[in-house]
Length: 115
Length: 360
Image (cartoon, rainbow over all chains, first blue to last red; front, side, top):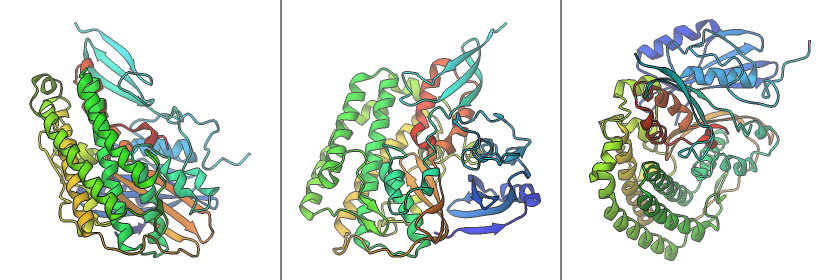
């Protein structure tokens, strides 16, 4: 069970998503991980039993493009990342604007610094 | 001219044992749009991984869901074991396979009962759950627990199954198969059942691929995808692991896939029981995980992925589960536009939603 990790920059995300879509991959999941003061994003795709994982590190205040126009279910994962980590995602097909999860505190997985 | 209205569906509804909400935009009785709302009971279990030692966290992972509890535990252990290069004993692999298939049977029987209940077939509901009780009895006999049985650990399993108990299990499974054959005709041949399921909520193979749906939802549309083919646990040693598919893509096809998978699970358990080697059931694990890994398993509801990231300490940095229900939400939303309001409960049920998993 190999994890085929490919490191990309946030500017190459859409291009890579489009390429994988053209190559008939499906979206498996998107996940965020706090790494120090940055966030590591994992975009996982599958084709039959193959697995490809795009890794992209961004700053907490960086903005990234949504891939929901390429992979429609991505809006669910993107809203989740926004609500739990405060990641700003542009052009989601459905944007819940922070109300996807009803959490007691804002961005519970990566609270924003004061000021 | 049709009249447009919005009907709230859930979070409390007779077919929903757990809270999910859909705003159904209707034109007369026909759904034209559905807007989901989840997050009513988000538990933050993934965050808890920072506060529990990686060996203890198995207990938390198992509590993500009461139905596929075992697979959550084994999926987590599998990811940690991959990071730490731990090879579990062959007997433990077979035991994990047996409990995983019993969990699949318990989940599918539970689902078939819920489906029967949703279309008002109370006696069929009770028959399905009567069979499910026998599976829970096997869990109790082999582990001491009926739902969450905490038998998986990093490095193997905590309990063994004796050859006498294995014989008893096979006998019980044979009675389940006999009873299942008796009432499967109600699902396969009954006109009332067919009228509620056939041609309802059709998803094409292409649509399923676009939506990234998994499990019986995908296989009901002809997608030959079953993560057991990856060969984790002892699945690489068992020839019966071939994806069961139907091609109609409707609620009936998804139902048939689950019914047929019940028989397949029995075959897998019998094959595992007959080839299970003797030996240890766990290995001693030393050190702490340092690295990251995505592990994938086939839960009753479909592919689940587990991401684990360790930093060399006893506390993990990140644990992330993508549950099959989360992956199938897109498919659910795609089936709703164009359907009748009366069919919405069937459509919601046939993705076999587990909100407990989704709200991990």
